[in-house]
Image: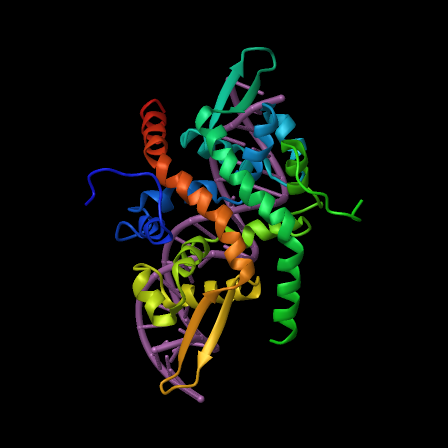
Length: 135
Length: 135
DNA sequence: CGGAATCCTTGTAGATACTG
DNA sequence: CAGTATCTACAAGGATTCCG
């Protein structure tokens, strides 16, 4: 029954894929989702989808990220294969970050989700207000 | 600047929407994303998209969630308007959780992202292996 | 059955200072 | 400029116990 991974698929099947493995690390889908779901990862992917940026440019672009979190998140994105890091041996050195092919392919579904958030944030805010009012 | 929400949009525009506001809580898009991005939220939304479930059923369905996290995550999903909670006054009482219209509309882009993860988890795993090997 | 309350451990993230 | 190192604070999350 598990010979070939066919193209997707029913809600039940995609849900089963998310519960594969006994725990979180054993489930490939949740493992990948975890890398995408970080606090800063989506934001940086969206930024780099527009065009490549240097470290300092990214810092200025994202107003409230610390340099520690920027370094760390970019490293995780590199490790997962979404981001390419290119060093220019100038002085002082500059480093340019850009999306890989894998990163660009991941951008599309992420974009859909961000777009949904943009279109529905008022509905969510209203739901929260209503919930808090009667609680 | 905040009069009308236009329909989307370029990469640059959607990215700008993610950096609106001076910090995280002030940005509506990131605020909504944060609610979707929880460790267990996507999994529960995917499960409830298939059909409504009772509390105990969800516990058994998600093998490695604690009851604390299940309670807490379901509460957050209710508060954001994604999930409806229906109490049946039987004895002992039973509680059924289901997606709201808002939850169902959010499911679609989420589904796209999970589907991407399902199709590309091997590429991500390979990227990690390669990165760790040369590091 | 479906939680709430408590305790305790771990992870996440900020501030600051220093380096090639 | 683009990081690294350390130290600290707080939030996320697990285990256990109790309740209507």
